[in-house]
Length: 295
Image 1: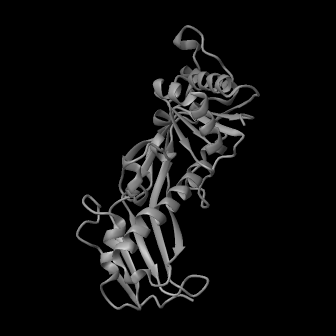
Image 2 (image 1 turned 30 degrees about the vertical axis):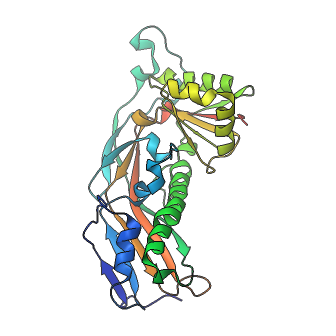
C-alpha cells in the first residue's frame, strides 16, 4: 500500500548541501513539520553516501573513494576515453615510447550517463516520535546500506546500463594465477603499470583484506601509496587492481533525497528511502587488472 501522491510534504531546508548538518538531522526536522500522515521528501544538493559519519573516524575506503571526483551539472557528461587496440592488449613495453602500449591508445570523445541509485529500509514502529534517534538511524544505518549499494553498482554496473561495472569491463586485463598473496599482488600490480599507469588502488573481499593485515602486506602496500577498498560485493577469489584515479572519474551532480513513504513497507509500516544521482567515466579501462584465483 502506498500513500496518495497528493499527500506529499516536500522540504528544502536551510542546509541542503550539508555543510553544517547531516542528512539525518535535516530529515528529522522536516518529518516534524506538516501533516503526520503525509509522505515526506527532503532534497539535498549533495551526494548522500559522502555524509556517512564514520568515514571521518576510521580508515575504510569505498570503491568510490579510490577514484577522482568531479562535480558536474545534472546532465550526461562528455569525457575523453582512450581505448587500447584489442590486438595490442598483451603488448609489453619496450625502452622507447613508440614501443609502449600507450603509444597506440586512440583518444575518443564519449559521454557518461547519469543514473539514480538508492536503498530503502523499514522504519521501526515508534521511531518517528524520537527525532534524534531518527537522525542517527538515517546517518548510521541507512547510509551504510547506501554505501554497500554504491559498491555493488560500481563493481557490477547499474541495472539500466548507465554505469559500467569495473569487474566486467571488456578492455580490462585478466590474470589467473595461484600462489602466495604477496607474489600474486606484486605481479598484478606490475601488470597494471605495463599500460603506463600507476597501481594506486585495490578492491578486495573482506577476507582477502584481513589476510593482508595479518601478513603485513597491507602496511607495505600503504607505503607504496596503494589503498585497498574492502567489500563483500567482490567474490573472494577475485582482486581488482588498477590506476583508479587516472582511469576513472566519479561524477557527482549534487542531487539527492530522503523520502518517508507511509504504509509502503511489506508489513504495512513506513519506509525510508535514500537516493542520489551519479555517473562514472572510465577513461582508461586497460589500466585495470582482474586477478582471479587469489583466495
